[in-house]
Structures are given as C-alpha cells and as structure tokens.
Amino acid sequence: MTLEIVKPGLATTVQDLGRPGYFHLGIPEGGAMDRLALTAANMLVGNEDGAACLEAVFMGPEVKFGADMTVAVTGAELPVMLDGAPRDTWTSFRVKAGQVLSFGFLKEGARIYIAVSGGIDTPPALGSRSTYAIGALGGFEGRPVAAGDVIPVGKAMEGSDGRSVPQALRRRPGKPAVLRVLPGLYWHRLTEKSQNAFFDDDWTVAPEADRMGYRFRGGQQMEFVAREQPFGAGSDPSNIVDGCYSYGSIQVPGGLEPIVLHRDAVSGGGYFTLGAVISADMDLIGQLQPNAPVKFERVDMDQALSARKVRKETIEQIRQALL
Amino acid sequence: MKTRYTYGGDEHVYVEVDDEMSLDAFFIALSLSKLVREADIPGVTEICPANASFEVRFDPDVIAPDEMMTRIKELEGEAQAQEKRLDTRIIEIPVFYEDPWTHETLMRFRERHQDPSGTDLDYAARINGYDSAAAFIEAHHSQPWFVSMVGFVSGLPFLYQLVERDKQLEVPKYLRPRTDTPKLTVGYGGCFSCIYSVRGAGGYQMFGITPMPIFDPEQKISYLKDFMVFFRPGDIVKWKPIDRAEYDVISQQVEEGSYTPKIAEVAFDLDAFNKDMTGFNAKLMEALNDA
Image: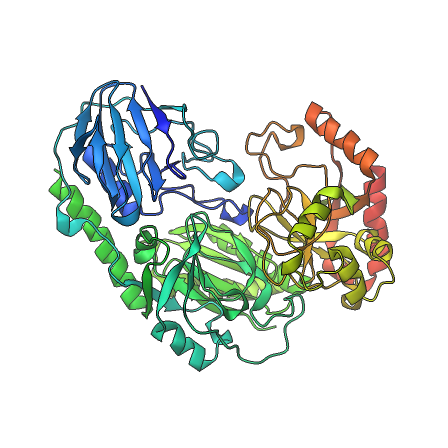
C-alpha cells in the first residue's frame, strides 16, 4: 500500500517516536516534535503508539491515497478536507483509494500529524523511521517529502470511523504559552538579576524556530558573573569548554536570545545553558508559531516529575476514551 | 579540578569534571562515563562523553533523578584512580588549506566575523602571533591531535592538539554563527579543531577542507560500510597538507570506492605523553609512517 504526495507543504517529514542511543555521535533522537499528538493520531487509526506518521509544519500537504485506509489528523487546528468535503481533526475517518486529503490555512498551533492505518512504512534507519534531514538519515530518502513521492504504507486491519479524542484531552499551549523550566547546568553563570529577569520577562518565538531548536526574543540582555574564562572555552562570557547539550536545554549565545534545543538537537557545543524545559512541556514547543508570546516558569524537580506524570496520564486517558 | 553534578531538566544528569580543558579532565570524564555504561543502571538511555564533561540521559519513571546522580557519584573515585591510557589508532587526514569553497563561504559571512577585512586564517595567524597564514598552517598540521569529543552533528569530531598548553592555538568563534559551512570544512574554535561532517550552520573559523568523508548515512563509502560514523573519542589525527591536484585525486578515489585512510594502531598513555611530548609524538608518527 502507498500514498502519494501531490503537494508537499513546507517541510513535511516522516516521524515516529525517535531513535535514542546515538546522541553520543551527534545523531539526535529526532521524532515527532509533539509526541502526544503523534501518539493520539496513531491510537485513532488503531496503530501502535510509535508508528510513523507525516509531520507537517505551518501548512498541510496534499496527499492521494493508493488504497483504502483509516486516517486521522491531530496537533494543530486547520480545516481538513477529503476530496473537498470537511473532516474533523482528532477524529478518525475512512478513505478510499484515489481520494485526496488537503488542508486549509492554519488556525492554531504549528504542527499536524497525519496517521494512516498500518503506519508509514519507509525503511527504518538506526531503529527509527524518523527523518533527520541534517544527516540525510531515515524517513523518505533522508529528506522532507516532495511532490510525486510515493510513500509506502504498512498493512493494517480495517480501522473504525469516527473515533474522536475528547476536547479536554487535546493539549495545546496557552496564550502566553507557559514553558516550565528547571534551572541547572550553567545557571550559576548568570547574575541573580538576570536569573530573575529570565522568568519575569515577556518573550516571543523568533523566526528561527525549527526541529533543531526554538529561539526566543524580547527579554533583557543577560549579565554574567565576572570570571577569567577557563582555558579552551573561548573569550565570550557565554562560552564554555564545548560540552554535551540535552534535549530542552536553553543556551543563550552572547546572553541575548535563548535557544531551546528540540528533537533534532545538536548534541554539544560551546555555549552555556541555564537549565532545561521540562520533559512534559516539550510537546507544547512543537505547537508554537513565530511571534507566539511565551513565559518561562520556574519549577523544581518535584514539580517537573508531577508534570511528567500528568502528561503520561493524559495519554492513558486518551487510550481509555478510544477503547 | 572539582567535579560538578547538575541536572539538565528531569531526564539528564550533567557531570562537569573541570571547567577548563585538559587531557586529565578528558580521561576522567571518559572513564567515569564508561563506568556508568558498565554499571548497566536500569533507566539509562544515553551516555554522551564530551571534552571535560559528560551527560547521562535516563527515564525518571524508571530511576529517580537523585538516585541516578548518587549512582554516578559513587563511581567517581574509581574513575579518578584509573590509569589514563587508551588503545587507539592514529589516522592521517588530508587537508586542502585555503581552499576555494571555504574561502567563498567566509567571504559571504564576513560581517559576522571579528575581522571583516581579512580571512579566517589571516586573523587566526595574527592573534596567535604568527607572521603569515603559511606559518600558522604549519603550526596547525605539524603535531598530532586528539579526538576529545564526537558530536554537535552527525559524527563531528572535536580535536585537541597534543602540544604544551603555551603552544596551543586559540581562536574565538564567529561573533554570530554562520548559517552555512561547506561539508568537510576543517574548522577552529576555542582550543579545538573540528571537521564539519555535513553542510550546515557553524561558528568555528574555517581553515580548509578534507576530501575524506567522515559520515555516510547510506554506508556506501568503503571505510564507512560497517558504521556510518568514522570517529570515536580517543582517536588521534595527523593533518596532511595537500594541494588542489591531490584533493581532486582523493575525491575521485573516494567516489570510486578505492580510497583507504592511512591508519595505524597505537596506545596513548597520558603520563608518558606528559613526560616527553616531542618524543611521544615522534613515536606516534613513526607508527603512522609504517602503516
């Protein structure tokens, strides 16, 4: 079974839940930016949680189905059309061979997940079908899909029509989006004034926002605790001896614009990091558009772990609701 | 040297062995990261060693963050006591310095550089006290380098020169990172050299380019058939300056699948190296020349 890309959208890639285990070589885990949305899309069409889907950003692709299958679109809000007739987001629907899925303009959020029963069946690379475009690895030929690509789809049981994720369980960033941050890593490099300002300031998403990382602007220039720079670090006070970066870690080159590393993170570098966005809020970043207002909220480890538990429970509630 | 432990969110423990770079700190970080790997702690998903630090990623649903940190701390004494010795290899990497491709790129991003009037090599030569770019290039390739970290993107090696600290070259990174760097650029930032494994963004100064690929996701290149990433921490590198004609010959050989990197098995012993750097490097070079 296959589906054909009629129009590719902006940067539509095959993604699953990623390939952990190779970050020590600079190959990030990758996978869906919004994992809850990808998991829900898979549940809707009867796939395993981590089956590969299409992730489209800011603009939907146009897709022609090569066989009958069940489809669901989750994540961002935008009009979904099957042969021009509206379909609901977060809801499964049957399609027939030859029918075309298309999308209207984005209304809310940033990324949609298109799941098909049987899952996208491109060959796995290092244990995952996720596309890591920088390394030309995984997905469809290691790149975003293009018009005319014929993408393989796995075999599946006939899925059911009209299953829907309850509104309350569709997780979306608020306005402003609140991203919870656990201070740590090189937090001590900032003066107390700058530490407080980071949480007090109003930020917006900068245009440089992609699968590698999201940049934010609008806050005050950060000040560093004075020191003689350690050997090998480089002369700027925001430089460190190149170390590992973690998913969600927040670096601030020159103390100016914070960058939160995401699923296609670089694995290391020479800028100080002030802490990290907690694991529970990584999905939300994937739904932020440029210029979206953002507040960073300080949490401790206990709060981070409770938030993680709540997110996990939400996924289980979705599973229960679809039984 | 005082080891610092901290969290990177709820899924990472970050261990900084020292805030400055040294091979002593590298060896302790590598030993400790290996001990963590051997301890086979349930919940650990990634162990990433870096120059003078390392990071452990774990699933906090399996092991609590404070317990994870405690388990690592318990291994520190053993890592500190381990012998700083590695069985490794020395590899000759051909470099075409002052090549046309990095030159075109550095001219394109001149306004992001400390010295828009010259080239990256002219600038690096001047601030390190060399009369000419040629003299600086000589200093860059005359003594071997040690891969102290693999990462950033797709198998990119960070290399630390095996010379006394006062002879080490140091340059800052670009004022603002470039959005483009040619694939296989030989770069420099802080005290580290690097090879950009793929085309993309970068902040290191650009000195030249190698025709020898070091990352191949399709695993078609003869010496990358077993694994797509060439470098691992502890590898030793000797740059070999080449001209355009040699660059073209090697590129052709890589294309045809007939290029084989020159490699020799060697042991690196930090105490022996520290006692006599010139003599130790001469022995490394002998092993490479015999290969």
